[in-house]
Length: 128
Image (cartoon, rainbow, N blue to C red; front, top):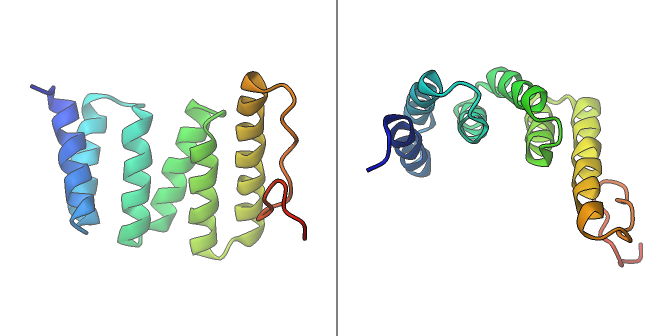
């Protein structure tokens, strides 16, 4: 049987999947109350806020995740999406670039010959 924090998290995921982001937020917050700093739940909570239309809160949570784990490429990617929703294109592009760099650094650990990331929207090996 899953512990209480996990039960709240899983219930939040189910509610989000049912298209009920506001109800999911309640469950995610309950999970975080039991386990502050649980970044998996924070990611889910931020996405639920974005889908509920509370994008400023999504941005706030995304920034918290980046403080907890600066090497979390998904956090930077999510922040980029949240900024795009707010029309903050410069901030969105900056976070997207951070995500690409973090992902590249992780790839270099596995493949020291990995090429650097290209500009936003580029695909390795494709001609323009």
